[in-house]
Amino acid sequence: MTGRTALSSNGRIGGPYPTKAPLLSVSSSPIQKRDDRMRPPTNKEKSMMKRKWQSVTFLILILSSVSVAQAQNVKITPVGARTGDFCGTDRAMVFEDPTGVRILYDPGRTMTGGNDPRLRDIHVILISHAHVDHLGDTRMMQDPNSPNASCGFGVAGPAGISSPNTVTAEIAAAKNSAVIAGGPLATFLGVKIAAQLGSLNTAACPGAGLGNEMTVPRIAPCTAGVGLGAKRTVRHVSANQGVQIAAVSADHPNDLSTTFLTDPERTNLASNGISAYIGLANGFVVTFTNGLKVYLSGDTGLTSEMSTVVNGFYGANLAVLNVGDIFTTGAEEGAFAVLNMIRPAAVIPSHVNEAATTGGVLNPTSRTALFVDLVSAGSVPFGDLRDRFLPPRKIPVYLPLSGITMEFDGDAQCVSGCG
Image (cartoon, rainbow, N blue to C red; front, side, top):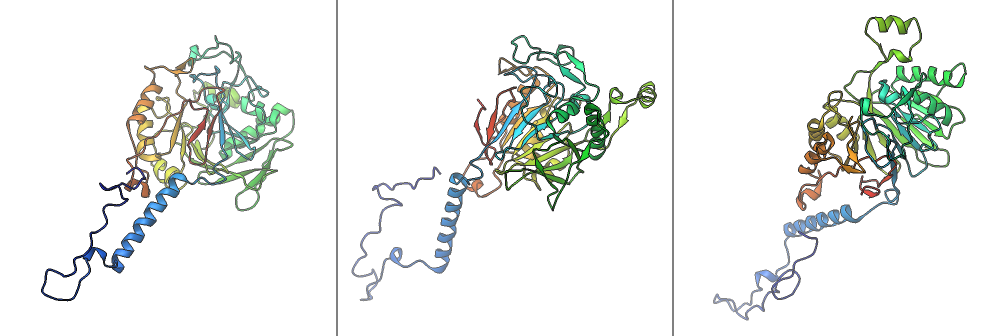
């Protein structure tokens, strides 16, 4: 069905009109009878017609109506190792809400420091867990705009210089950011931010009202713990509505490298081949003011909560999924999660631990290409009335090319920057 009413063979909408009824019926009765086709509809038929029109009206509304809020877009800008590419060490993304709230997710090892010019204002930093490639144990020592910038992983990745207080703390100190993470990790980062600033401590972020709301910009950095199934709200001081940040489960270790510790703990733990455990790893579901709901998976394997919580409760419609394999879900597992559990409107791969693109073009033999192919080959139902009229929908995959800003409306439709 295309949405247009079909024309009959005689050119009229809905088919030929009934012919004129005969003066006498075929029976011997002298009473003229109306053609059955001209009789008024019964109550049952009226009810069926009403339901059909309601269904069509509802479908039209779904397909064509866009609210004022949804007309405003969330901007997503990857901050990676080489501008225009998706590289092996890339983790960081900046999300900008229509109200102006700017959120940095997992800074990692592709920042040149707390004042990296690509960052601009950062009101909030979200940290999924304590591993060095997410907190940032080194500052990147290459120009991301250089065509010769390294894009690989491991020894093929960009060179860096040690950041003893974490790159996260450097950015928070420079930008007066609110750092949101699991409780023990947030406490640890508060100590590191204070060390970076040379102060005694870092304040706890406020959390007012039912939504645990804080306002930004802030005049000093702060830290905020958030547990699984809990949430905080960040509202720009000039706005009436805030961005909700909820913590969700991620099945992954959350041990802290001894690099960040002081003695005697550093020496004692390192000599025993262990590191400090610092609470639970987590992902996030971020609900923006235009209605976009972004699932940030963090490092995780397959978990049933992708279906029951991320999809079933929060209804995330854009997924940023870590699919590097070995340490997280792989390409096959990630595609299964997208098509069968999360079922978003769109997906952005992350944490692929390989040079996924060259010159912005997907490398065909990469793990990332396999993920894209598997997701693109599948389809999922809409889960609403559209399933009666339309074939199953496809889920587009958008590559996070560093420095290229993508814009998404509230329905997770990419309206700019997605190629």
